[in-house]
Image 1 (cartoon, rainbow, N blue to C red):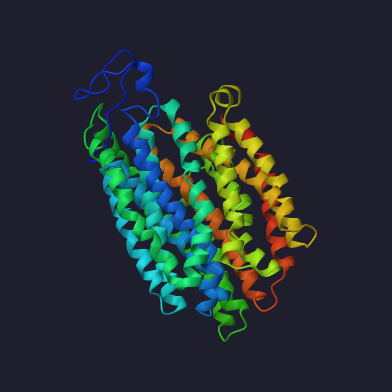
Image 2: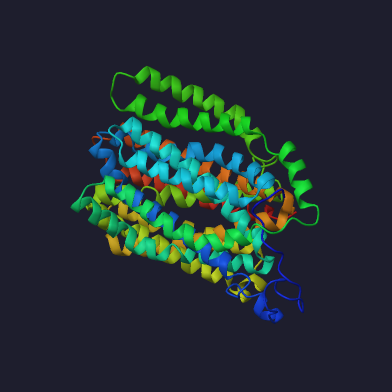
Length: 486
C-alpha cells in the first residue's frame, strides 16, 4: 500500500508493542482497548457515532422536509439519491484506498460530508435538496470504505469482530437521541437545522480520530505498496458502477415522474424503461463475477449482503413514514422505530462478537440465524401496517429483526476480510458496498414509485406490500447461506 495511512502491524506474542512505546504483555497488547489499539478504536467509534447521528436525524426528518419542499412524491428519490452516488463513490474509494491508503480517502470523505450537509440545509427547492443528498452519498462511500479498510488493516483478525460490534454499539445513543433531537430542532427552528447539527459534531470526531491517523502514517512493509499499486491499476473498473448508478437514478426519478399525476408521465415511463434496460446490461459487470448466481466465496457474500439490505432496509427505511401515515405521529415519535433499530442491532452485534459464538457458529450459521430473525421479526411491522397490531407490540417484532441484523451484518463484513487478500481488501469492500447500496436503492426506487402513485391516498396497504417483499427477500437469502464458503 502506497500510503500515508498505515498502522503498525500488531506485535507477535512476546514482542514489544512498538519501538517507541514500553513493552506490553502479549495478552494486553491484543486487547481492543489496549494502548496499541485504543487510538484506532476511539477514533473509529467517534466517526461511526457522527454518521449514526446524521443517519437517524435525517431519516426521522425526511417526511417533514419533503413535504415542506412540496416533494413528498420524491420521497423515494430523495432516499435513493445518496445511494446512487454511493455506488460510484465506493468504487473510487476502493481503488483510492488500495493505492493511497485510508487516511487521504477518509479526510476527503469528511470534507464532502460537511459540504453535503450545508447544501441540503440551504436547499430552496427539491432539486437542490436532491443534489445535497447526492453529495451525502459520495461522502458516505468515501468514509465507509476507508473506515472499514482502516479498521481491518489496523487490527488483528481476532479483534475485527469486536470492533464491528462497537460499530453497532456506537449507534445506540444516536438511535435513542437522534429522532428526538430532530423533532426538537424541527419544532424550535425548522427542519433545516437537522442537517446542520451533524456538522457541529464533525470537529470533535476528527480530533478524536487524529491520533489514530497519525499512527497510520507509519507502515509500508512486506511489499504491500507495490502489490496495492498493481492491484489498483487492474482492479474493479469504474464504468460499470457508473452505468449501474445511472440505471438506478433513472428508475428512482422515473417513478415520481410517471406516477405523480403531473405533465411528465411519458418522460417518467421512458426513464423507467431505459433504467430497466441499463440495469440489466450493467449489473453483471458492476458486481464480482458469480454474484448473480451466488457463487461460493466473495460473490456469495456480496449477493447475500444485497438481499440482506433489501430484507431489512425495505422495512426499516419506510417505518418512520409508515408510522406517520398510519398513526399520524411527528418526527420524534416516528423515530421510535430507529431507536429500536439501533439498540437491538447493537445487541445482536454484541452477541456476534462473543468468543463462544465465534467458536461455535461459523459465518454461514450466524448469517442464517440473523436472517431467520429478520423474516420472523418483519411480521410485526407488517401487522402494524395492516392495522392488526398497535405500535408497541408491532415494534417488539421489529426489535427481533434488528437483533438479526446485528448478527448477520458484521458476519458478512468480517467474512469479506477473511476471503480477500490484503491488497484487494479495498476493492472487495467496495464490491460489498455496491451490492448493499444496489439493494437499498432498488428498494427505495420501487417503494418511491409506489408512494408517488399513491401520494394522495397513502395507507397501510402500500407499506404492507413493501414489507411483504422484504420478508420474501429474507427467506430467499436464508436458503442461500450455505454458499458463503466453497
